[in-house]
Amino acid sequence: MSKLIIVDRNITDQTDLISTMNMDLPDTIQPILNQLYNGEYGDFWSYIIFGIPIANIIAAVVVFLFFLILRKIFTKVVLETMLMLSRKTKTSLDEQIIMGLREPIRFTFIVVGMHLFFLLIFVHSDSIHLILESLIIYIIFWAILSLIEAFKDYIFNYRNIDKQHSKELATFVIKVIKGFVIATGASVILHNWGVNVTGIVASLGLGGLAFALAAKDTASNLFASIALLLDNSIRSGEWVKVAGVEGVVEYVGMRTTKIRSFQKSLYTVPNHLIANNPIENFSRRGVRRIKMSVGLTYDTSSSQLESIVVQIRDMLQNHPRISQKETLLVNFNSFGDSALNIFIYAFSNTAKWDQYLDIREDIHMRIIKIVEDNGSAFAFPSQSIYLETLPDNSVL
Image (cartoon, rainbow, N blue to C red; front, side):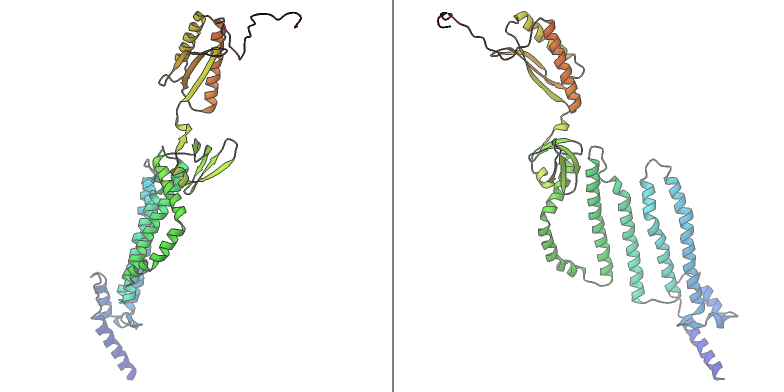
């Protein structure tokens, strides 16, 4: 008899508990459970385990499993379809965005399933509420980080910027942005848990100041590197002269720049020195100057000299590798000690060293032919001695 009384008391307690258990659940879930409690097998469905009716426990597990299945269906059907369509577009950005948001969306199904699971088993503690809210915040900032990662290949990706330098700077900027996003997300979660974030930041102020003072040279190099990129001052492979160093740029990093001299020595120059000194970039010239003086012998007649000057000028004006947009001068310049000097000033249409040497050699050969065709010759340093009287034979 006592056993029956206990059972009756349990049923009464269960019934009283069920009558106050709605907890704002959707009307399509809890009313069904209420019918089970009042049905033929109500004693079984209303049996309490750890203070929770067994029907609610089973419903909570089923709902959670349902969201896991829904998560898999969403991944296989919706996301895979979107990926298939994105691969047909001209850009890969949409595909990277979908791939970046894939895992945050999948994890969202788990969080929603957990939320409904706890609602169905009537667990509404502050800790559970804070954990679920923290997970939602985590998903939001996770999605933001995924979007940043998807856009990283498009940051500073311009044709007129050194690719290696662009990659270095983009990596640095991405890390800074990610650090800011992570710090913001952490502060929001901590604030949600009642932690005084302002006090923590203030306590870190002195440590941050000491760190900044210790790393001021590194910081100056980083900002100098950003300035070099924005100014587009130097790129890998260019011939430059800066801070007393001349050579070909091999690498432009976030802290230093490596320059290979023509003696094959490797110079590592801090970026703040490059940013604060004049940069002579020989590779940006586009053209290269040809400057020379041609000396003819003094037995060259005026008509020969005039013809040579005209023919050299015409040759340069019609040369396919001489820039006609730049200054071009050919003039009889001076009476030298041992030669009649013709001044030649022109520019090749390229700044490449090997091509420039070929152009200069071709011009030299053409000038030699012009001088020879006009019956003149090139002078060389010489002196003429004139004796007014010859010495006596006795002296000799």
